[in-house]
Length: 137
Image (cartoon, rainbow, N blue to C red; front, side):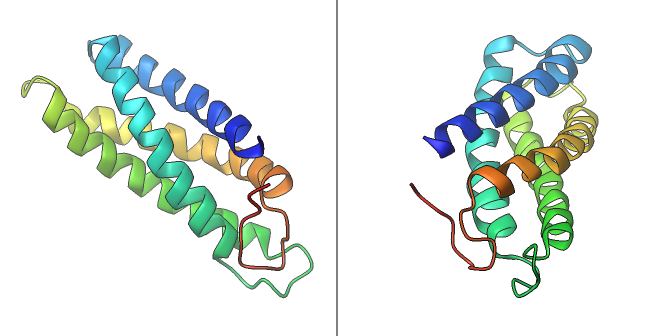
C-alpha cells in the first residue's frame, strides 16, 4: 500500500506539471499529456525512487546519507524526465511543437518537486535506511 500511495502522489505531481507546461503552454492534447504522465510516473518511480534513492550514498551514516542520495536521485530523475518526455513528445506530438523546450521546463520543475518527494519516499517507503533494499510491505 505504501507504493500505491507514493505512486499516486508522484502521478498527481507529474500530471499537474505536464498539464501546465505541455497542455496549457504548448497546446498539447490532454490525452497525450495523460499518457506521458503515466509512463513517466512509472519509469521515474522504479528507476529514480526505488533503485537510485534507495541504493546511492554511504549507507553506514546514521541517516543513510540521505542528502547525497537525494541529490543523486533528483538529478537522475530530472535527466530521466527530460529524456522520457523528449522521446514521447517526438513520437506523440506535432513536429512543429517545441518538444525540447517543453521537456526541459518540465524536467526542471519536476526535479524540484522530486527533491521534496524523496523525503516522503525515504521516510515512508524505504524501510531500512542502512540497507540497500526497498521495503515491499
